[in-house]
Image (cartoon, rainbow, N blue to C red):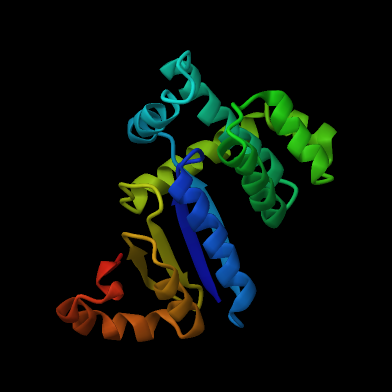
Length: 208
């Protein structure tokens, strides 16, 4: 079984597309994938998101946006406490409203998405304001630092049966992740030197 960590900007359009592609790979491959979307919150994600959204929302404040990103992540964590798959469904459904329908985040919108997915809304409301959600957020940011993640949509892949090393995909690529999921990490590791020489899609993989 493979563990796949996709690091994302919660309001990144490219990240949203990558999330859907990861779910598509999980649905079509015979291998079992354990997927985690890991949201990032730093100056880079805040600034890049602000540049994009300020063109659509002239009155958007940078500090308000940073708070919205933080609240989106806490909502995602709260939903995930009711099941990781439910958490990912919540995250994607909320992103569809924010990115696809161009809505601005509000606590009311998060509650509506939780209700639409038949989450325990009372538990969700309690968890989104809890220290547990804050701690989960902090753990994600430590993971970003420990794995040396610099940009959203970078992806880390581990074989749970062999944790000696993992693979970092610096630029998310659907075909590369699908191939790894259908074979294994070790086979991909063996092919990396030749991939680098030939400049193939696998050349954007490196060993952690």
